[in-house]
Length: 453
Image (cartoon, rainbow, N blue to C red; front, side):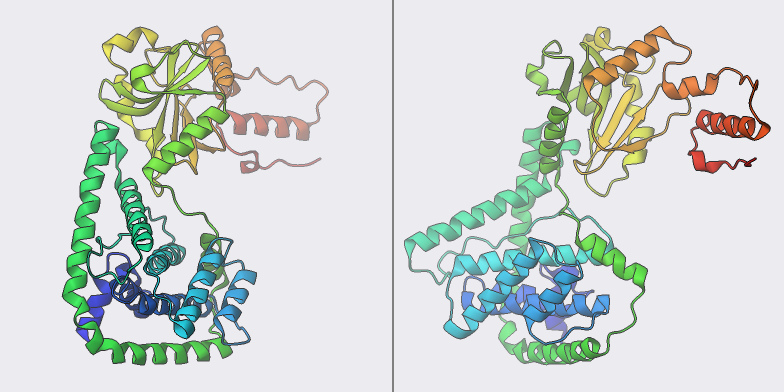
């Protein structure tokens, strides 16, 4: 392959990461985004070819034998295998329909071509995460304003195109927001906007440097596609043996919803808290007496800031840490020592337990949540399906006050009274003793064996 063609594919900010999986994916994606304004019909055709290559790559990697060589045959087989869930299948179909229309009737619709490039990006990232086992939080880098290059004469269509570009820029900015790394949400958004603008400008410079060479390299693209399709045809008729565990892992990962960025995660966390009976308030307007459970966003601590601080019965009892998908949540709740310093002086009287300012800690991505009760002996984190309700935590607080030596259920399990064996068979005594020992050491009940008599 010509180095210029390789650089063209790898240089795309949207499709470069696909080169190592299948060079044609990055090349077709880069071609579609490079010509979206100057030749939208060609861009739609290239986007359709991207979809075809991606479907062929999935069939080969999963080791499927299918009848027929049409794109719809591949998509139907992949859907039946559980690889293409709703939404993903519709995206593939959209690329297929647009390509057919562009190839047969010529479709000079720039807004539609831009939408097709965005679909290619979405599918490429989905494929990358399914193969690599990752959860990539990223967003499409849109082209710069088309200016005089765009092939649009209808003012309404031009307005629609620019509205779409503005939406893509806003989505890119949102995806780059790092709330945890900034003092305020406004500062995080300002940094994200500057980073998004740099990405867009860099992409534009790269496109201009390489687009002039595309015409010279078009014959190579045709040859690459012909060779790749021949390999696919061979694999389709005689699928390679694929490890069942690896195949199932790819299918499972392909079925997952797209990961949330930090802004989306905060929205999801707010909704989760509200569903569990918490009132969610901003730091500058919070009222801990507004309800039994109040979650305060962006709360200032003695050493930094907490994403959410939890009040129950007007007392500070816990904290929620919002994390990006892919972070290790169990270690986030167990090892975050910055909470040990507690709150600022003006909030100290509101702390429920001074020795453990944030006894009940959560870490969540909005899709996955871990919890740790720091009052437990040898406290460790565990995954939970939802936040606990304020009244539940209130009950825990009352128990800890009434029984300070055994403030939690797990602590009480370590202080069970001696078993009275009267009337019990030896096997029953062994079973009960083993169960109590397992509970006291916080082990699953299947960790011990008992004899049967």
